[in-house]
Length: 188
Image (cartoon, rainbow, N blue to C red; front, side, top):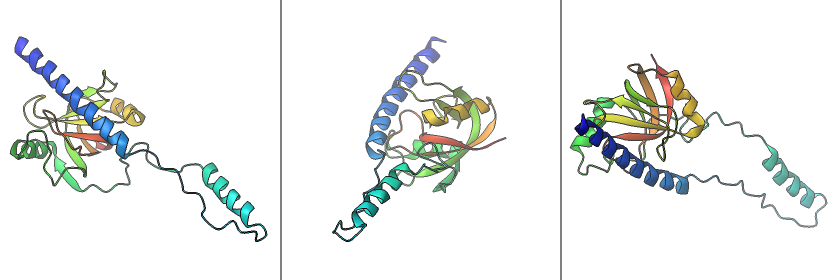
């Protein structure tokens, strides 16, 4: 029992470190970009200057009609569709235990597996997440981290349920394969 709690503690510390590193990296690369102002000439041609300012104003006032809440959306086509066990096997066979295989790194993946643990709320620096069984409990699970905007989706899942999740493979895996910015594609 003591050995299991030590392993769980080490696992949580490693995931905290990995998630914190990945979150700061994704915040740097996914900052919102502002629309460029209309660069048409503001020559004294009648109405041109006011037209330019109206165009910029229209751009700023248009409501966003995005279908996605987080970085990964239902419209994004996955680069790979895999089973949780396949990601665990890829991690075991990788050259480095913390760097995902090049074929997966930075790619959007759909992963199917059985839910082993649900964390619908943020725990310290760990984001809301779902663990999918990929082999032995915990150490061979696939961690699927959800954005705050999408964490309510986790409450629709149950332990031992088969699900397909879509997410982005980060640049670093700590202890277990992981996906970030996950969304639910299908739940049976």
